[in-house]
Image 1 (tube, rainbow, N blue to C red):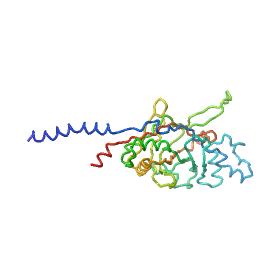
Image 2 (tube, rainbow, N blue to C red):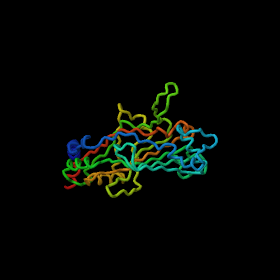
Image 3 (cartoon, rainbow, N blue to C red):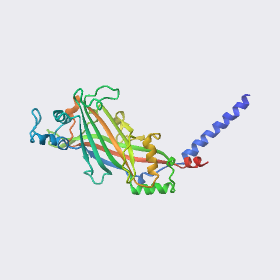
Image 4 (tube, rainbow, N blue to C red):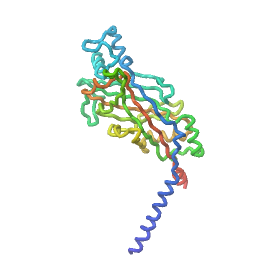
Length: 309
C-alpha cells in the first residue's frame, strides 16, 4: 500500500520543476527600449486658475484676513475662498500639457472642501467611514502607455497573435514619485524645491479606463497600484515594482487593447488627503508631481500553447 501511494507522489514531484521551468522559459519580457520610459513633472493648477473667478466676483479684492497676493497661496487659502462661496467642490481642466513632450493630455483636477461639518458629507469620509477634515485633491490624466511605435514592436514580438492571455504581467517600476513644491529661501533668495509627501494623511495612485483610438469612453474600472505606505520607499536608488492586478476589469480590458496592435491611452488617477493642520504648508503655485517610471510587459507563449491543447 505504501509503495502504491509513493509512486504518484514521486511522479508529481518530478513533474513540478519541469512545469515551472517550462513556463518560466516561455515568458518573454518586452525590452525596455520598446516601451517608452515615462519621466515628467505633472504641475498642479495654480491658485488663480482654481479660485480666480471668486476674486473677480469680488472686484479683485482679497477677502479680509487673506494675504494681499495669492502668489504663495496655500490649500488653506483655497479652502477659505471655497467656504466663502459655499462650495463643496471646484474643478479645473487642461486639455494639453505645458510640456508638449510629455505623453499626457486631458488633465482634470478636483479640490474637495472637507472643512465644514455637513458640507461634502459623502465625499469627505475616510477609509473607515469617519469624517475627514481638510482638503482632498483628486487628479486624473490620460497617459499614452503604448504609443504607435511600441505597439508595432509588441505586435512583432507576439508574431502577430492577438490572444490577450499572452500578456502574463503588466508592471510599473517607479524610481521617482515625489510631490514637490518650490519656495524662495529667505536667507539666500534662491528658489528651492521641497518634498511634501509627509504632509499627506492619505494617498493612492492607480489606473483605469483603457482607451483605444476613437473610443475614449470612461468606465468605473479604477485599479489601485501605489498606496501611501510605499511612497517613502521609492527612490532612484531603490526603485519599486508594482504589478497590475491581473484579475481586475481594467487589466482584462488593457490586455485586449495591447494585443490589438493599436496605441493605448489609459487614465492615471491620484487621490490625496491633506489634513486640516497641514493646509498652510501645501502650496499649489510651483507644485506638482515628479514622476519617473518604466512600464513593463511580460508575454507568455506557454499560455498560448497550453490553451490550444
